[in-house]
Length: 324
View 1 (cartoon, rainbow, N blue to C red):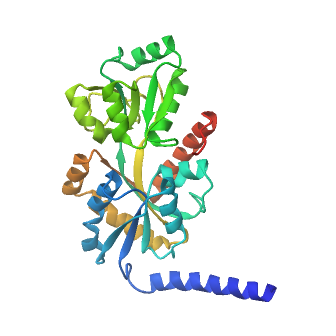
View 2: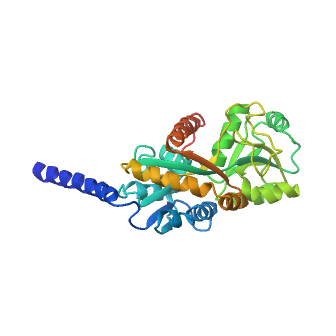
View 3: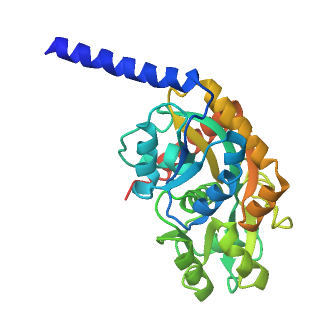
């Protein structure tokens, strides 16, 4: 039995070595590249992914195919990519959910950091603190004061337990010393409907679906939950500016590959994405989606990822957030 096990292990090792050798033997890529999206087709991530991969085929000389594999709070897509050959032909549209939050909240079949090689960061979508128009709070200090006068009475919406909007609101609750009640929804649309209808009082949500309601005055934007102001709401301050230093819960998108992918391949991909994101046309298309170019090469992405992981894991622990 032991001989059989050793033989199988040696064969597996040889197979991985052959995969990597073949990837480097000829010019990369030597076939279609699949980018796996952990969210549903037609959603914001799907639209963003199509925007950035369309120009890649000309740069890389191969088709780039988008494969949507939603489910498991992004774990299904992440596990699929983690198990793929490390040849640069299968990539993941990466984010905090797939690499940090979901592995921290539930048992998954992969390690969110060790089982991947990271290529680059590509874009970010600001999360914005909004309140219903009838709430008597026009600034963050007024909101904090109101919440302290009515402990447990104000409620906030999110797009699910462990989502970026949930984490942002929990961080706000901790940093302000307020007691506000969580109401999870299945998506941004129903949360916004209830905000507009007055069933909930506030929320931290991705900017794009909020913009028309902010511009109409139906919702009031109080702050941005990251270190830089949102390009589409330059007049709205960040929470960092308002006295909550380091407040950053950003919805970011990057690219990752299975662990063991040769650095020559990840470097080539990072360079290709840098070229794509430098295009004014791509920047304009992303802006219409409410996303902003946020390019970080591999080393800077790894540093950002480590910082994000430390903050979010600590927040999950201190807020006693558990998976559904």
